[in-house]
Length: 202
Image (cartoon, rainbow, N blue to C red):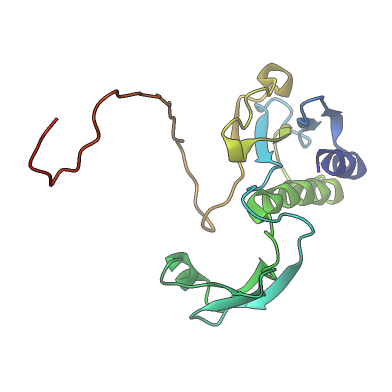
């Protein structure tokens, strides 16, 4: 996917397109006339998708959502695959919308392929309409978000952006101004296993 994205970036006219040995793709886009002194804005997307089920080939489809259960199709085991507003309450906001989904046989991978497509499409629009005002853009497409490494090896100095946005899955129109941070600890306890309801303690 990194090779495909790098080729797409070159095709729309991005500058300094680089694909490194870790599958990080970076590029730049010049500022519009009059905005050259503005700070560079970064957009970052991740290239990987969840690994827990089939990811390829993806079979996308467009479905008009009319409410209730949204049946996508049948999985490889023949079982019905569907989305239910009881477990996905965000569906309530999408009644009447055309939704791009998988057909149930694999992941769609929209997290985060949709963001990658959006950023490349934005560049194509800027190429067609250079009068749209915008600062210089630093672009990063990184692997490993789904396993928690994300942009760990991204060269921020080379990207050269003063601020930026990670484009990822979420409700339409939602902006998050903070992110989680986490640490892991492994603790081993050497004790006797006991059920809380037994008469004897330790």
